[in-house]
Length: 93
Image (cartoon, rainbow, N blue to C red):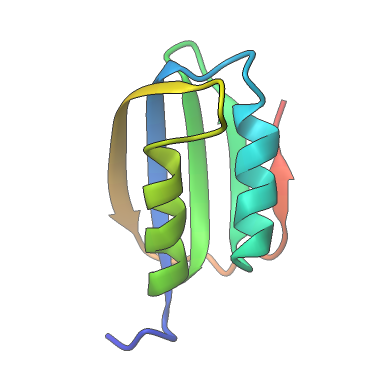
């Protein structure tokens, strides 16, 4: 697999990740890295999908371990999936 091949990571983040601008910050970061996908709140925390070149997706996953300044991340679980050719990055409600 080359670094330019598109990969997809399905990520769940738990901890103090709601009410701290995690979704909007994650969307800003994902757009900065040129990734496609989405982010949303769940009953357990935050769920996101990131698609793009592997190095950028891995940087985004690393960012998820910290999150925005007010977040306290307890756990980040990543499942690698087949890319679905997404375009753009959205915050789901």
